[in-house]
Structure formats: C-alpha cells, structure tokens
Image (cartoon, rainbow, N blue to C red; front, side, top):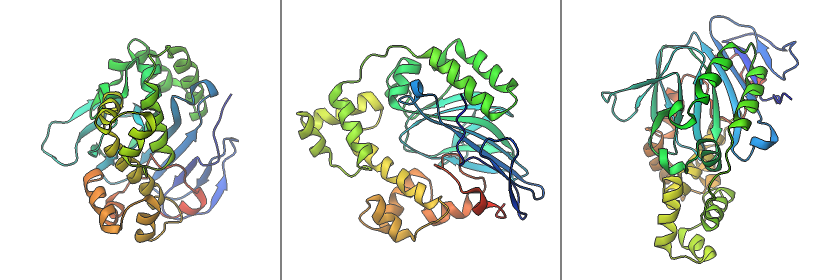
Length: 316
C-alpha cells in the first residue's frame, strides 16, 4: 500500500502557477523554466516504522554546481543514487580525499559532510533510527558513527537487488513500496539495546535535548560516567553531544520551514541559552552561522520535515 502524504512537491523553477498533478500522489507542480526541484516524502509500512523514520525521493536539475552540507541529526542516513555517484568529502577540509558511492549509509555524526554536485542530484534517502541500525544492519549505531560506508558493508547481499530494483521502478510510489518489501524481509531479531540506554535515548529525543546527563543517570540508576560510556557504546556519541545535535536539528527545522521565526525566537524555542549559543553550535555542526548557512545553501534541503509546495512556487 502506498503512503505518499501531501508534503511531497514538484517545482519547476522561478515563476509560475501551482496546480495539482494528475497522479493522485499528493504532489503539486509549478511549471516554470530551467530548474527542476522534486521532493516526495513517503511513510514506511507499519512493521518498519520503529526502524525507518521516512523515505524522501528527490530530483534536482539545472542548479549551479556546488557543495551541499549533509548535517548532523538523530538519524542515520541511507541514500541510493538514481543518477551519478554521490561524491562525499569533508566540509571543514576541501583538500581532504573524497569518496564516491552509488549507495551509502552514514552514521550519527557531529561534523557536516560535504556533498559535491554538478547542479543535478537524483536519488532516494531514508532516515534510519538507531533501533533500525540493529534491526537492518545487525549492529549498534556506534559501529558506523562519524563514518560514511558503502551500503553493501552493512546491508550485504541485499544491496545489489535493492539498488537495481529502485533504478528500474518507474515512480516514487513504486520505489517506496519496493523499500517496504525488501527492508521488511531484511529485518533480523536484533540484540536488545540495554533498557537503561534505550530509556535515556527516548528521554533525550522526547525533551528535544533539554535534559541533563546527571538527571538521565539518576533516572536509570547509574553514575553519570557509566551512563555516558554505555550511551556512547550504543550510539557512537555521548549523551551531552547527542542532546546538542537534537537541539541543532530542531533549530534547523524551524529555520528551513515556510514560516521562519526570528533567530532569537528559534534559539529560545530550541533550548539554547541565547542566539550566540546557537551560533556556536551551528558553526560546529553546519560549518557556518545560521544566517550564512541559509544564504549559501542552493539546493532544497532533503532533511526538511515537509515543505509547503504552494509557498515555494516561484522561489527557484
């Protein structure tokens, strides 16, 4: 069964009027000139929802060549390119060696990845939960923290079949359905995350990162040091750092939404002490202040929770 909510969109750049597409998939098209930005979101089938947050199909054509920042979040990143290989480097060091992948998985991280492109990108991205790392890859998220690896490293012999079938599927809906079928068949009975660690993760995400490590440790009956070490062993990041990533992610969602609040309001809502505090985290996690990042990012942002297509029509 297909699940493509109305947040999917298909925009053809700079000016024009918005009209529903006739495919019944909740997408909208704005007929314009030169550029194409297509972004379609799907929700996984119920058996996968603890492991995969969502699917996002994307296709961008006609943009200027550049570097797109792959930003930290609470999810592992799973991408299959439907076009040219994905060229990944380090945003902080343009001279560092780059790797090319037709399909990749990236772990939880704190430094922005540099995704080099020629103005055209076409692929499908999945947001994998830490529980999904155990269920789909048979390992805790910590095993690939701060790393980007070829998909067959973690998904094994399923990778060629998954990649080939996604390439030949004619629509986003068919691709999402294929992912439902193939990933559901790949689920293993994972080794359980220690319940204290799972509880600490749930509390961090539920509070938007606004809970102290000492409080988490008290709740599960561990010392702060033991809590931090066991958390890091499972997820690859200590709880204090993960709380910062979650606050950053919340701020990013507000700043990339259609109705963008003032920076001071975003800082307060995301749990920062002030705007300067938010700017410091942004420089670490995004490589730039929020203002500079928003001005420099040319491609629509695949990690956005949802985009109002009508509001984006006419903004290239």
